[in-house]
Every structure is written in C-alpha cells, then in structure tokens.
Amino acid sequence: MPKKRLKKDNEEVQEMKGKEVNTDEQVLGQEEVAEPSREDQLQQEVDVLKDKQIRLFAEFENFKKRTAKERIDLFRNAGVEFFEAMLPILDDFDRATKHREDVKDTHELQKGFDLIHSKLLGVLEQKGLKSMDSSVGKDFDTDFHEAITQIPAPSDDQKGKVIDETEKGYFLNDKVIRYAKVVVGQ
Image 1 (cartoon, rainbow, N blue to C red):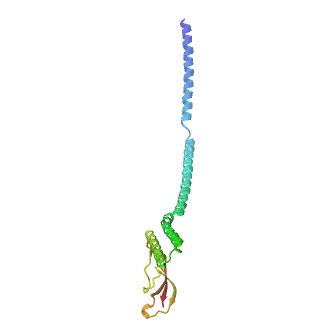
Image 2 (cartoon, rainbow, N blue to C red):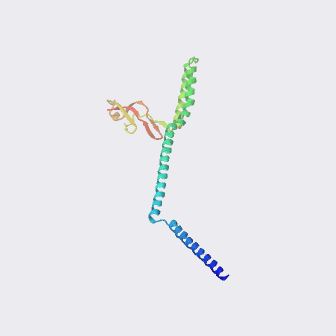
Image 3 (cartoon, one colour):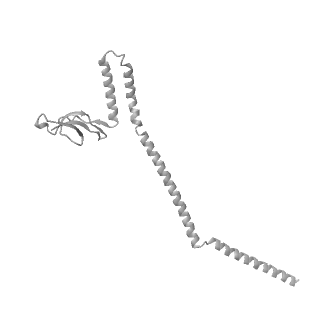
C-alpha cells in the first residue's frame, strides 16, 4: 500500500509541477502583454494626441461657423430696434396722408406735419442722431464742413468763413455721419 500511495503522490507532484509551469508561463505571458514595448507606448500616445487634435480642430471649425452665423444674424437684425421706433411715425404719416383731403384749413395740416416732424427728430435723437449747429458766419472747418463752392466774400472779415449752408450736417453718437455742405467766402 505504501508503494501505491507513493506512486500516487508522485503523480500528483508531477501534475502540480506541470500546473506550476503552466502558471509560470501564464504569468510570463501576462507580463509580456501588460508591458508593451516603448514603440507601442509612443504609438498609443501619438494616436491619442492625433485624436485630440482632430477633435479640437473640429470644435474650432464649428466655433468659427457658429460665430460667423451669429455675426450675420447680428448685422441682419441690427436695425430692428431703429425700425420699430420709426413705425409709429410712419403710421402718423399714413394717417396724415389719408386725411389731408378732409382738412380744409391748411394751417391745421401744417400743424400736423410739424408734430410728426418733431416726433421724428425726437426718435432720431434718442437713437443718437444730433444735427450740427448752423455754421453760417463760422470759420470753415474740414472736420465738420464740405465746401461745395467758393464765392467772393462780401467783406474782408468773411474770407475763409461759411457764407451759406445748403445742407445740415449730422452726428451719430459724436461721430460725423454727414458733413454740412457749405458755401465758403474767398
């Protein structure tokens, strides 16, 4: 019986050794899988960085498209506030035009148009438009005036001064948007 037992024990030991060898091979195999070569690591890093770059580029392109669209919308709708403010004045002109034949007294008609004119000026001033003060008698200034013609000055003190103003000048938020058209003494 002891010989049979020894034989059985030897077989079990051999099996265990075989299993240990297999286990060692598995561990070595796992280590090889777990530790990729330096080249593989660098390639993975390159792939990750390329992916990040592609995503950032796509995100930037989307940003450019979105901001371009927003800018177009902004320009397209920039005047909406102004036009909304002008609509009541347009309505007043429509009513005045509709009833002008019913009005017998031209003084009343003139009074109505004067009211509409003052309302228009009020809205324009709210939006930043301001007319230039009359330039007649002042020195010609190229920052505010556009000389349309020169005439002989009636007197020596009128030389280089504005003799007449044919068209008013305007500011929009302190910036000249139309120069006053003037006649200058020579």
